Image 1 (cartoon, rainbow over the protein chains, first blue to last red):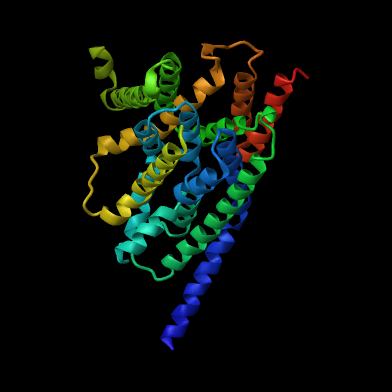
Image 2: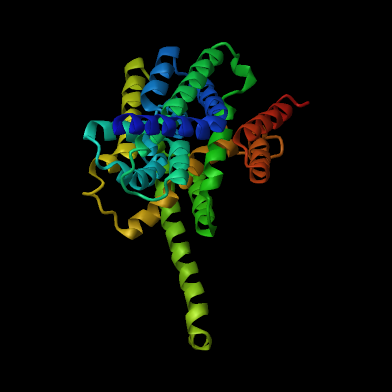
Length: 251
Length: 107
């Protein structure tokens, strides 16, 4: 009796999640399509592009790697770049993983691998608190399976389409625009804005450096400057609030 | 890049996805990132993405090109403004591609 009730509950949770994720699927598929086209336009063959979409399953890291592959950057530079671009997932996974710590490790490994930005966002919206709830697992699956499918269908269409569209249409630029759209929401405060400006400027100035090393220097410098600005802003706000007249006297 | 090299990169990228998405699922209770490191990490992706696209938009044949005739720069700035208002990725890509094509073909 209780078995059938909980099985029903789990099915209902899966359906609820699928419904919650529905409005995002078109966007996910279209985004997959853009990445699919961009992979072909960057010079990957159709089998390579299919392999990349099926194995890597991370649009922004894939897009970031394409100009580096085209520029014959060394594999380790491309790997490090993808890791850096993927860093947001480390933070997401730190948030999501405690909900499922009771599962066997193999299952945790592939659940984590399939949990992209949108799925994590929707899951946290529905279940903000950690702790055991047997509906959480089907809910997560109801988010990640349709998400994966929409992404792969879009990507494969993009790959096949990309090989038909002539290079003169300049579709590769859509990849740059897509990265722009991922980057902008990540610039969440003044410190991040300064960091991004510094990283961009250094990337420009060091564009001639071999092995695309300028990229890594740009990221490190951008991070360091963003941290310094954040600290400076905090100190200033703190000084104004707590010290009042004394604070001004010291300056 | 040779076929083998590209496949090596693809495998490495898959590893990068796995490390980023699954590390905390597998070893979360063993990892304790200092607060400073966590804060610094928040800024890394935006910096990396900016460092990738800015040269793409600004450089023409390796030289800085900030003229109005540079279609990638103008379309990039226009797309940036469009996204900040509309907050919609697909519409922004369509809009940016339209501006890019318009300038590039000298319409």
